[in-house]
Amino acid sequence: MRRNQFIGLGILGILILVFQLVFYWFKNTEKHEPVVVEFVNENAGNELVLSEFNPNELTAEQWKNLGFTERQVKTILNYKELVGGEFLSKEQLAKCYAISPEKFAEIEAYILLPEKTSKKNNFENSFTKKELKISGKFNPDSYS
Image 1 (tube, rainbow, N blue to C red):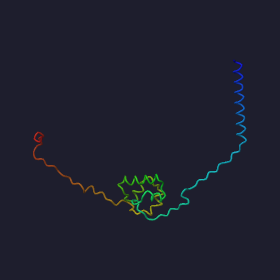
Image 2: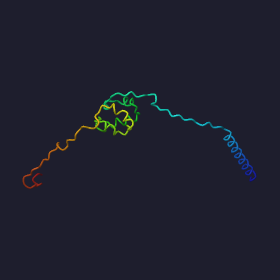
Image 3: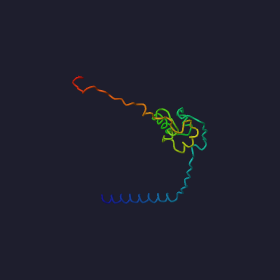
Image 4: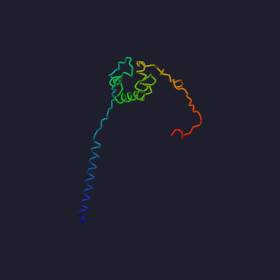
């Protein structure tokens, strides 16, 4: 029994050694060609034709035509709803993180919005202080 085990172990060792030599030989004889990677700019052939636009009136498809991805368009439209349903100024539109500063600089001249929000906060004048006058001392028993 022991003799058969030693013979099997020897044959297994020889097979492993043969496989190692064969793989080593194939690895060294095979010539690898260097891989050339070329990056293609998706917008290289698509020059954007820009004209004046109001960002409040643009649909998702029109935002895509301005060169934004579908995910950026979704973010811009969500931001628009978050700020009250419409952009009031270029400054407010620029705060949307989906629009990079480079892209905003590219389209800024064509945006039909004021530079800054001209909406004034008249909170000071909208509320007046009122006083409550109570005659006599307060007795809770008389109100129940």
